[in-house]
Length: 345
Image (cartoon, rainbow, N blue to C red; front, side, top):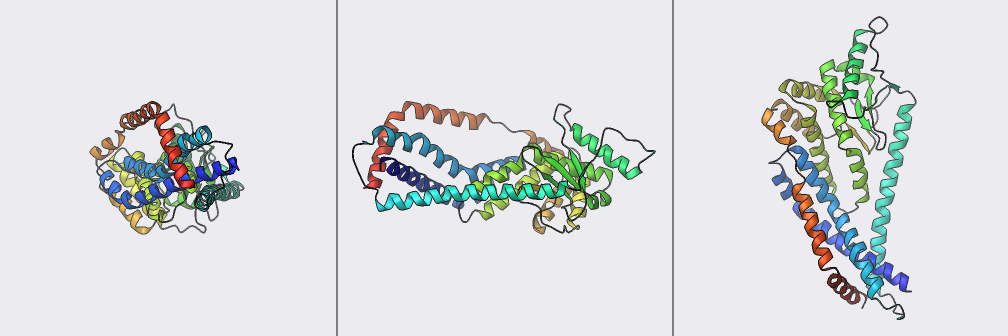
């Protein structure tokens, strides 16, 4: 009975915090987005992601750091106290929320794995190490040259990212994979894009890989709460714009990427991209139009601002919270236990 009561109380604290913080995020995220738009798209995307995952992180942290220790240390084990209706219902809701998030994440991962496995059957890695004009045509030479540049990256110290050519009803240009990410290039996209447009488009997908956006999508599947679809859509839009900004370094490259987005938006894939993938064009027409307008209006100051990103303030805030927690930990445990006693009764 002691263990069951502890589980019920812990999940009750979790769901109460998680619901309250999620409701607060639902009401505040638009204001945060408006404020973040004064900064770079990258910062806007990061803030929206932090805001979306904050309820789960805070609720889990408080439950594990305060609710569970306070119950184990301060709750008498000899008392055979029954579980009340309220903590039982809240505990079941908390468990259902956690299990639903885990199920959605696992299902999304399985679907993405099956999709990538199906693509891999006929995929061919573009060999960028050798370019021999005697046995391949000019377009193949251009594609391999682009793959070689992408493999090296802007920084030669970075690990190479394989570029695979695939036919069939695959999205024109997609980055897939979490542990072993790859970029998938359809023959249709390869045909319609020029060498410079293809290079800019591939750089865009490489930015998604470097930022681990597919892994972030997997994390978002763990966070279950109604009414968050609009926030997640705003985050996906911000990540696309952040990848656009990071993929270009001049006005000509921005125009090349804008042309690639326009051309690939006209290629209707026979199947929608998997959930845990990032396609160059996989968003509503309004978002695509906004991206193209931003790229056409590309300016050097905006690109320079996008590079400035400091973790000093977040790290200072985390350190301040940790110091406060250490100093007041005993008192916090007593207060949390008093709150859980009120909840049980």
